[in-house]
Image (cartoon, rainbow, N blue to C red; front, side, top):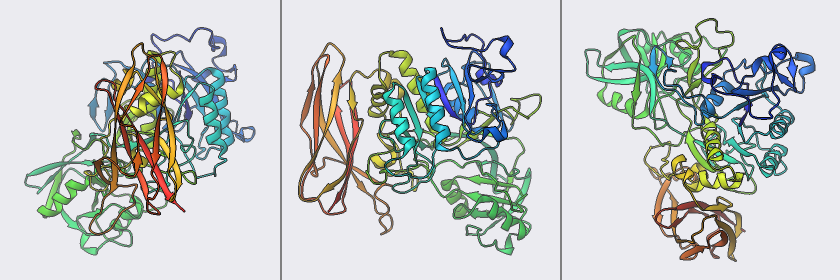
Length: 583
């Protein structure tokens, strides 16, 4: 059972079809007589044998009288990612493009709707979120998904403490790292909680877009992502490259042309409004981070009613090299499958955490151009028809339910596994494949990707666990060594022996400018700054301790970081280490 603490779940959406489901044994449920009333503190008209809970948490509800109905799309989207049903005949249609065989990560899981953003509420209070967490724990949820975040609230962050308490109560908690990246110390609250699984976002490798061909007479065709702005009109048109971000103004030379503008600095609406003021007939935004283009959102208050699309960073560079005078588009959209997976999303929150300097996020999953369900409320008959019941979203909000759903799968496969064991399985058996958002080629450190991109198949077969799942030293002194113990547990009848090796992370230099040590770098074998044993033996049905030591004498201000690899040939693990050398 997955409790989604979000904007609610539209239980009428076909992605949550209750056919074949029945309420868990002993679970309080609504019956026909309760269909238009409250029962067991539930909004019964919003539950089903698939979405078995519907509750609202809003401290001002005596003034607004909101119920648990999913008015906003966000929660229906996250719930679909985590536990949308699998039905080979259930197809999503986005911009006329059919994408078949939809499924969530844990299609057989029950869902709980714990709505902390009812109606048009955009900012949930910590007390409402904590009340929802308490209710979900009391209801017996196995996993909680919190695709939300906010500002840093100090080391006594009540929400972070409350979520760690939920883990202690036996619940796996997945929390978004937040969308305040890039850069250090951008992980949001409550993602800084030590015991939860904090999730970063990486790129997908497909999107639905408008075919864009240059020159107009034929040649190269690429995909242009369409969001809240209208698509470019079908046909041919002239291009004008502004070679700017379009935030202050757009060159009058764009008049009568499609203006090429760089992403960054200001909102999309500001760029498009300036292009419209310059007389442009449309806008082509070039992405400023590696990976596929994204669907652009509009911001209220701008005169921005103009066609506008986005193309990828590499595709934009190639377009500028070709420098065509014109281009063309067609009215028929298509799905573009690319090679742009496993790139850290530019927005993904990064660690270390404030003050205690712990490794966060813990793990990474797909959070860009993620297709899932959206609410049908108010969209009339035909939902989820073309463009109304399905959408691509991006954010750590989308990567987090991938982990929540994965945790539910592991819980179903291994009923006795604890939250710490499930966390270790997902984190310590992830794949170190994430690249940086600037170039799409460099590696990123443990405070940006955690232990890498999840690999559920490998996690499910793991037979050894670690606690904690990473070696977070925080601040260490220059003059003395600092040690930290990792407990390895082996539940099998055979002893496990691991060879211990170290992979050092070193920041990269781009064009003479050293970026944040948390953004990008290279990996190398060995790290003389730390000491680990050459091997470790974990006895059958027992535990042992692996000691990691940051050696004395490291230069002041050094970030000692990388991964420690435990290799047995069949049950390998790895974990990140991080220490900041201070006075």
